[in-house]
Image (cartoon, rainbow, N blue to C red):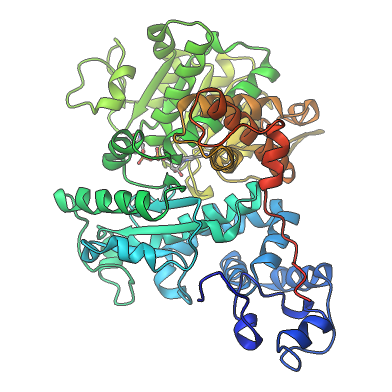
Length: 545
Ligand code: NAD
């Protein structure tokens, strides 16, 4: 692809997804740009193009085919792609993100058609800088990078995890208006331990086991240094790294460039927001909550840390705040005396006899909220949900594991087994549930409510850092934006169709913190919200003639 200066002509223009308008090129543009005869004669409006796309999309036989169709549209005509995604966000987000993107990653090497993003492998050590310079756009503002070790709840997908950075960056543009040419997806290919991929002759990543030694850190170091040098204004979002690397990479790099880990911090904020909105339904207060997490990985610990930060900000002593969060992981309840606890789990190890059964833990601890983030489908059994409902008038039950097939329980199970009293949210979307004459609309605790807005705020203010305080503020803004009508239906998140307004509000709050705390590398504008809105990409064709 050409560097962005200068508009290509003729067939080259039709093959340039950034500038292509397809059948919407006007007669004057066709004459001026050497397109006459290369397109069918009728000039279409963007609305007509959208209608054609939706017709084709809805005719496809499976979600994976819909995903492929949308990817090919993105490769042909980005403006039209984003117009469709933005206008039909509720229908399309599950196709370009969870759950469909999970399937697309699993089949990546077999459905692969065209490259997108940058692949940096162990073999590239010593020339990562050169690889970043191969990227056709210079003004990169957001990079999403993965090493493919923990893709959704699907585990190690190696280089096939590339669908995740691509999907997240599409959401950055659709939900928060980061310009498509300012987004860069990156996969760091350090091998995979996925046996079926290693035995698959079509697997597109390095054919070796995952690097665990110093070579891993050296590659990540080289990558981070190259980002700072080549794209100094970029925010770097870490995504779907394995547990053993995610926490330490976040710790290691967060002071040195504008960086955050969405699985830890973004998840923390979106779940805290859901909890705060749930408390608007139950009329509870944060201070009085006891949260039991099923899963103590990035999501669980990230949510725990954010809840603790919110309680501390409310004036609760940190030890008391930590005492409100209990964790149940693959070894059972997290209690004192367990050997070899990683650093991030230690604050949540409490004095209690060991408990090996989740239902037993619920019975003993009487949590007000149960949060599933262990990727173990069906773990919230009827017994568990009934116990929650027997102990709490409005039990808060979040089944956050992705994709849908990994959810701890379905929306229907949560509502049915609690006789309609559960306040339920999930990681992947569920349809509304009808129980007798009542309708319940489950909220989706989708990180897309948080990270695009946080990123937009950091980009607009040119913040040097993304702080924990910014995530806390984002969670509170999001919870406040849930309408009373949504709460009446049991929905603890705003409708996805409002996501651009949500992102703008979050971005304004985040940028405000950056300006106030001296983190911004730009003068504060008079009206921060208006400034944020002005930054947002709109999927409108420019006039070339
Ligand atoms: P992770 O690999 O970091 O952690 C998984 C945790 O689950 C570990 O603590 C592990 O000990 C525990 N676990 C595994 N098997 C278990 C078992 N049988 N019983 C009890 N605990 C068990 O993964 P993560 O990043 O924390 O993500 C976990 C899940 O949460 C994934 O499915 C992911 O898609 C989902 N998630 C959802 C959201 C969201 O809804 N917004 C955000 C992030 C992650």
